[in-house]
Amino acid sequence: MNRILIITIGGSHQPILKSLHDMKPDFTVFLCSDDIPTQKGSYTQITDRVAVKKDCETSYLPNIPTQAGLKEDTWELRKIKYFDNLDECYRMSLETIHEMRQRFESAEIVIDYTGGTKTMTAGLTAAALDDGKCKIVLVSGTRSDLHKVTDKTEYVKPVAAFDTLAAKNIAQLEPLLERFDYSGAVSILQDTIILPLGNEKRQEVQTYLLIYRGFDAWDRFNHARAYDFLNPYRKYLVQYLIPLEIMKNTLESKETDYLIAEDIIFNAERRAAQGRYEDAVGRIYRAIEMIAQIRLKKDYQQSTDDVSMDALSILGEAWKDRLEKNKNDDTGKIQTGLRMSYELLVALDDGIFKPWYTENKNRIIDFLTYRNNSLFAHGFSAINSSLYEEKVPLILEKISLLLKTIYKSEKKKRIEMVQLPQSTIQLTK
Image (cartoon, rainbow, N blue to C red; front, side, top):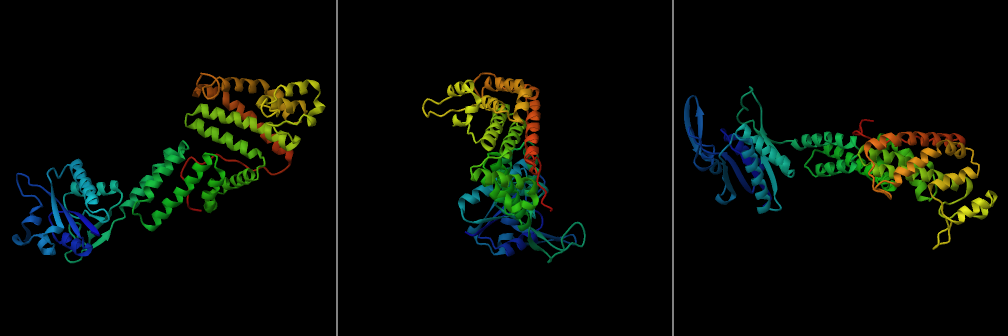
């Protein structure tokens, strides 16, 4: 079996014959209306004969299978009892599609909704769209008026219904993107790309799929994979690609750059937008810690997981004793945490960090307190939206000022980080 045709039957037989002639199905399912008290259903055109009315006279032709030359074992009919009930028409149509796919696994399923009541055609089309794997066609032709296609002008044309469904799915990305749910957007686009789309719409969906796979990878700190996805679309994404490329190269070379700390802060803001305040605070903690680590590494050649005591001999015995207490018993290495790293920079008389930390020390200690008391860290108190909004924005503002001061002192052009998109990327550049 190569092709299955599922077609609704209404009052006119010519479009049905045209569809059978052009589509040449190996098996056909006729969806017909059942009887009602006042008249027979459309199934009589399949089992009995076709009535043709002209000039107030009725003549009769053989039934549709006979006229089409269908063999007895190549078709079946199904009656829809409640043919003006959309749920019933949809249910029977979807059951028919699924059954045909199980019976004829490798066959193409073609849906023709030309005939039948409006409800029958709506139910069959909706079922085909939800199935997502059917080809949809319609018998059309030249019209001399708004009521009927002129006889003998009919032709079967494919319907780009799935392009419409794809456009609807793309519109559904907006609420997901607004909360930075890139994985949710990817899921919708993956379901959409497998639909039988037109070339132009398929290209659009594929572009969005790769772009949001890129942002999803970036959101998971996989900068190299994100760059691979996004770089082909640089003309749409240049404001994101410039800092991303720097971070990718920095991480691959195992160097340090304050952009990475900024990236973590932006990531924290995305977690907060999703109501994941514990995750957000944990990321902010890491960003604050990283800024001090980068300063110590770049300007003092000190690693916070292996502090060199010899290079810090200028600090005196008090600091030597303090650092000795932070020696790891297993490795013998001296390690400093967030607070001690900043205090070490103060002791080194760092011209930027010393005044900044002196001014913001209490804020940092306060931040560490509610971070450490959170469920995410060492305590049992969940961080909710009110606590987050009360404590975090000011810390982020102070961190931003610190970074601006650092960049200004380096006397080089600052690469601006921007938050990842919260709306659909416009593919019009």
